[in-house]
Amino acid sequence: MAHVIMDSQRPYQAFTVLTATTGPFGFTFPFIDASDIKVYRVKSGVRAPLESLGISYTVTGAAAGDGGFNGGTVILGTAQSNCAIWVERHTDPARLTDFPNSAAFRPNALNSALDRLHGIAVEHDDILLRSIRAPVRDGPLDMVLPPAVARANQYLKFNSAGQPEVGVGPNVAESLIKNRLYVSKSGADANDGQTWAAAKASIKAACERAQELIDAGEIERCTILVATGHYIESCPITVPPKVAIMGDALRSVLVQPSVATSNVFLLNSHCYVGQLWVYGHQLSPTAFDITPTGYAGFNGTNAPRNTEQTGWAFSFAPGASIQVSPYIQNVTSVSGSGTFGQPGFVPGGGGVLVDPSTCVEGNLVNSIVLDAFTQVNLGGIGSKVVGLGYMQQVSFFKNFCQFGILCVDGGHITALNSNSSFGNYALWAEGSRQIQGPSGAEDFGSLIEASGYTLTYAGAGLDYSQLPYAQGGTGVEDTAKYFTELNGGRIYSTVTDNLGDFYVGTFTSSGQPKFRINQRQGIIEGRAFYQSVFGFMAPLVQTLFGKR
Image 1: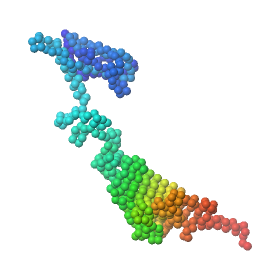
Image 2: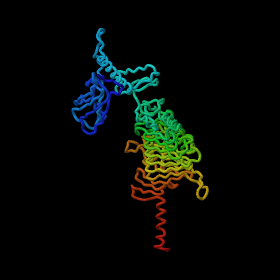
Image 3: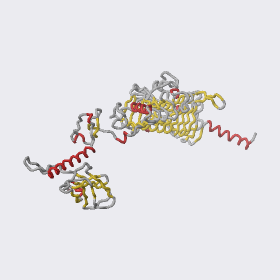
């Protein structure tokens, strides 16, 4: 009689079930005993043996004659739907025959034993084909896993020698994004920075890596994400073109230069910096060194206001080619310490410098744009614009600065919804540059356009003791320090101060307001107001009364 042939057919078959059915599920691979057939259900991604689900089934084989079956069918005890049914062969590896030395030759028993062995070999071969294997040429590998307690919540990965090990692994979704880099206090600058697990330790190293990727043509733009922490950086940090730096949150990411008088961030075209706090920088020469003799503060070296200084939180990168303005948003600058005039007072740094003389020649755009920037630079400078430079600032709040806004050599600043609080000189415009106007060469005086600007105790002083009396200090506003226009500098402004007075324009040379609404007294005053009223009334009076 014919005997079952245990061929090399894969020992499983799968069936897709849509509508409810119990079968039959016919399969073609051979088997020896019905108990070797196991049935599984795969539903919603979960694979489970039917026995564990409380579902019975029966197996009917196509008998091969004197032993085994050439395929068969499975019938379920309970109808199933919207799932897959897997019918598999798992031959019992137990030895069921033993041949004594002096017994008669029994070919059927021998064939059955060999069929079982062949079936088991096919099943093991299938398992090997679906397993992860190392190439023979790699030599021996230590494939023993660490104890369960050591590998819990860890990744199985490979070290630099290709050996398997357990440890913290990358986030696969993160690693697929090449134009995003990560910085963390737990990172290392030797890492590639492509995931949080392989984060850089410094913002500077991340910027340098971004530049490498851009130069290699692998990316065009990049975002650098900075985790919470206090980063003492080897400054300056050059932010490449089209690179954005984003901190976790404004108050949780502190960036401090290792050398206080270093510039911190050097900006290029299209770049962006947000959600961080620049701390501990110091101008050199200081703001006092460039304050003219006779003005409040240290007289220092009496250097010109356009003197080159370091210690800025943000400025242009040397050689920058600006096509789109760098953008600073939701950032704080804190610097300086102590009480002004007392031993140990350390003057602060600068917020933003816009000086295009460091950029390539011929830039059509020489500007930096900022929004939501708070400065607490004791005796420092809020913003400084030189020559061809231009700045747009919105919600830019300057506190305790020697110069709130300093505009020299024909620089131009537009300030909206901003303020200068405490400190000394709120708005200072000085000097001019020559331009080619519609009618030929003409001078363009430094220009500050301040609209919706607030002066809160401006001129009161340079440290926390100069807070107002209502807040425990002794600070009093000084209107003489509101506006400073020198050598062609201009200030066009609409300003409200802490007294509630509303100013349009600045003061006359005699120190009188050009136009002021005095809310305390309920009057309008100023030379421009009187002139406008006189200009309107004089012809009317003359017409009404004529000459007498």
